[in-house]
Structures are given as C-alpha cells and as structure tokens.
Length: 69
Image 1: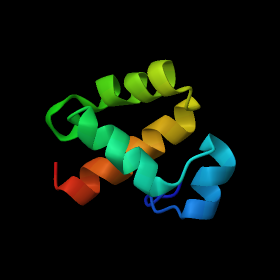
Image 2 (image 1 turned 120 degrees about the vertical axis):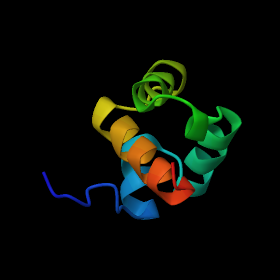
Image 3 (image 1 turned 90 degrees about the horizontal axis):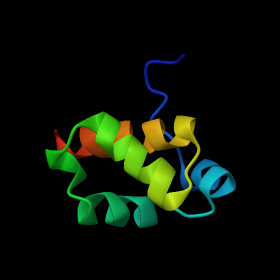
Image 4 (image 1 turned 90 degrees about the vertical axis):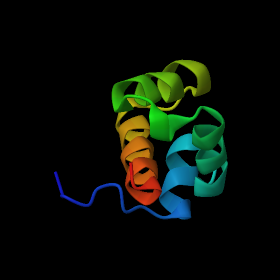
C-alpha cells in the first residue's frame, strides 16, 4: 500500500462513498474525531455512515493528519 494512500480527491471519494471530502470532514469534526482513537473513528464511519472499511480508514487517516492529531 502506498504511504500516502489518504491523499485522495473528491472524485474518488464521491465514487466510493457517495459524498465529497467536505462532507466527511464535517462528519468527523462533529464526531470529535481528532480526540478519539482512530479505530473508533473508523468504526463510526463504517457503522453509522455505511462507509466501506478501506475508505473509512483512508478518510480517518486523512482527517487526523490534516488536523495534526
């Protein structure tokens, strides 16, 4: 797996999740993802938002890196 797999664009994310990156950033901020364990964030995206595991991990990693967490 590429070391920068979280470096994705809106087109990819919309294709796989149905929503753009800005939507997922809002979801993760509302969940207070920066202050939670990454596995809990991934689980939240999977269970509460129906995001496939790979994409839940990608979105979580991207968000946490951008948040400096």
